[in-house]
Image 1 (cartoon, one colour):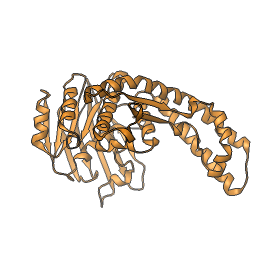
Image 2 (cartoon, rainbow, N blue to C red; image 1 turned 30 degrees about the vertical axis):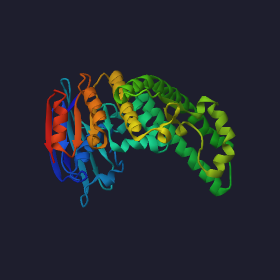
Image 3 (spheres, helix red, strand yellow; image 1 turned 60 degrees about the vertical axis):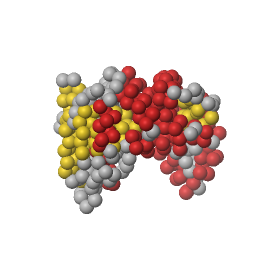
Image 4 (cartoon, rainbow, N blue to C red; image 1 turned 180 degrees about the horizontal axis):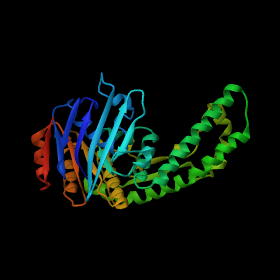
Length: 359
């Protein structure tokens, strides 16, 4: 699969701009602030129905305008898909495929598999568990609609249970039977999600470890450990044990919405004991493993977006990454960088077709 062209109207800093792309490598080059990352984000937007960097649609409209629109033509073997994403102030966002409106955005997920590597990915290491859960859910949902629907359903019920807890607290009342309805529904959705996440981490870990060794040339032991409360106790029991605390805090404090992935190097948390270089290698290996898994499951080569990484990585890691990109199982690649000459010298080493797109 590859993106042939894209058109942006009132998207972030662009008034009206169109781009034609090479089937393999595309280098978007220019000074800081000209919109290189915004082009990559628009591609991500067409794939995932939202921005990678700012999921609030209103804030993706160019300042002073009333709407934005992104259009792209994706080619998959002999199939051509025209994807349109548009949003107008005061209205709902619209996603269309070949002129047909999606009723649910979740129906589009997985149509255009994509992996992005960005400096902001450090949030996976340094921020809270929410970032790592989203990472798990993103990768699994690309090829598993049932899983995506389970996660959406779980969070709807969770919101309803939390609203009920707030109602009880505000009105100084309590009804165990009405709360039990939500407990049963949460329990119904939680276990399949738990099993899918557990299976995913088990499958991803050895692939990730191989990539880490290839990138780092190090002898460190790196691991991904799935951490869930459901591993140690039944969900129904946890809900009952935590009921008094939930009522006091007015939200559900336990469940799969608290799951996490522990990132370890030599059996210690990498956010505390990993050097900056080790953390960079860890993140690239994680995203390369994501690429491999999505490729294996979907049988499609995901688009690969490399945002400003040549400024953030040392020469050795750039070299390792480019050696990976040389491999045939990669498809279309988009690179943003501030230095045209540096980027062109790097991509020439891949011996693949490429296009330089100056901004």
